[in-house]
Image (cartoon, rainbow, N blue to C red; front, top):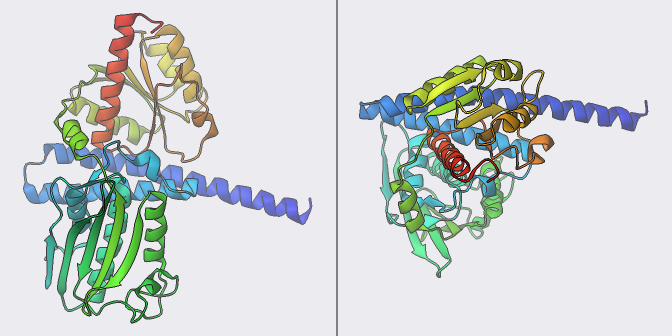
Length: 372
């Protein structure tokens, strides 16, 4: 074997190993997200609910970062809801993730308008804002103030200002903070957070810049594509129609049991199977409206199982779920077999949306016949 071939084999092995780690971490995050979402749904104590919300936000954002590692380009487009994100809410979520629990000597002002929305995914905005807040807190060890405000920038753009009253940015050229190796205080440092945030926001259609705060403190400006606040309102007001019976097929016991508990909490009857062989032996066509099938099942793959289920149950709405971030077989899956694709972990709201779409599709097929 030549040195070049050996190097290629090593790199392929490293990539496969990294993908396997991403998969395993996603499996654990799926359990954490599902269980925490279930507890949050049941929580009556406001303080407990706040902690659970932080766990869910951190878990979901960690999964997005893993997805970015898997694809190399980020998941901004595929993760963005059609209506975008409500800026004031995302600002509060970022604060929940990084702000001192006791508040310390810090003051927080969120002056963003309730209706302000950006066409950027909440995960991307939270990551950027969390980094900016951490930089501000780090620059003001004795305490200080952070203010979120907005400016209008034409019909299709909106500006978000993140300002603090700390020591400020490098004199003469605030943009130095976006150079790797420079920290927000101008001292030598890694400088990776802000540089990465700028690139991440750029891929999502936004821009990140910096300026001095009139001689005192720092200001970071997020220039964002405007979102649709009216569409957000409509989505939030919708009452989802959920299936009465759901088939779950997953070889990971922890994921399978978590989904069973979460779906039961949503009012669904659940048939859970560990693999394709058990499913084909026990599932009766017509006994479920929606199926959540893991892509990488032992023996019979998830796609092979879905193909067989479709033949016997043409009205069944099939959702293919995976913890792998790059899978050519899923990308090329026949749309006549797979109706929806989902990545682990799924937040409760995402799962509810998937079930809602699946139920609607099942009803349409029942009303129009198997060929619809």
